[in-house]
Length: 491
Image (cartoon, rainbow, N blue to C red; front, side, top):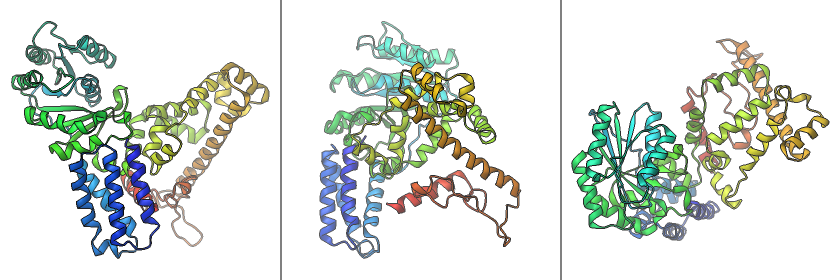
């Protein structure tokens, strides 16, 4: 996702950071590099021209040119302009008071409308709504069957209306929703290999018949420059309310997606970065801009972690602090990482992580999770609860059972040992904090003590963040803002 663009922009910023003071020639050269990077990423040339002109004008001010850190100011200006180009703020779905609400999806064939409809239904179901899918694509072979199969996998019913006209199917789906108390109907319309009058008129007729609360256009991120013509035509005929960008993880350029909002004025509401039902994500322009510029998305990581956590995991965390870290706990942690998108997904959201991943060729062996899971499953119940009893003989047996080498078992045991030590340190910290009571533990001079830094934070450039509950950040979001600020300063 935006890999080549991110690399090119960061190379440009690196050259600026090497200069103590910027000249007009430096700014002009940087803008030329940024223009080429955006064009090579398939961003529309009119959008690029406007973006570079506005960015250069802001960079040429005395405030930037004569500042102590001109390179950082340039990065901030590029971040601000890129965020504005992407839409400035999140654009949420708007629901009316009527039941059911109707969401209509439009787009070309192959853009991913059907899978986007299912992913949207999955997300709405998680939010407590009762969606119904309407199969209005009567032209593509087995389109209704595909929707029914995918809908069945997530537990969302599909109204088919086999043999009927798409307009009648859409009307029938709304009546079905009323009869069965479904509060949202998602209408999956037909697409074509190219824009034609019949396709556009059918979409207009369905919209007129069901009066949708939201019309969303599904756009394939890999469409490239032609994306501008496609969205412009649909905007003119169907006047859609927002965009879902699909397959954003399938193209290292993805610049066409950056052009949508500027060309149509319509907001990007969701992006799809995977095949699974939970891979549809709300679009946050500021977070995406930061990821493109290599600043990461720490807020996104926290949200994914919170989403992956449940009551049982919170209880397990308390137990680990009391009793120590077992192999069962390690297995649960690996499953949680998978649920958050795997190490590749998490690394891509860390500041500088995507660039590091690109330097590794974009490859990260996620298979290590499966291998480690096989090793843990080859242990006895007692060995999982008390890994310290695993001696050389037991390791050889475990390796044979898992189909791996004893060296790989040793590597896993070493990882467990390090995590168990860290859990021990956290247990000590918790005990010290509890012993201090509400007033807080004091040192010999009577001053309130701060909790010690958590091991590993210094390596991330986050030293000094151990003041939780002792006059430090008042909430998780305050802590998060501090983390992001420190990371930006590190840049």
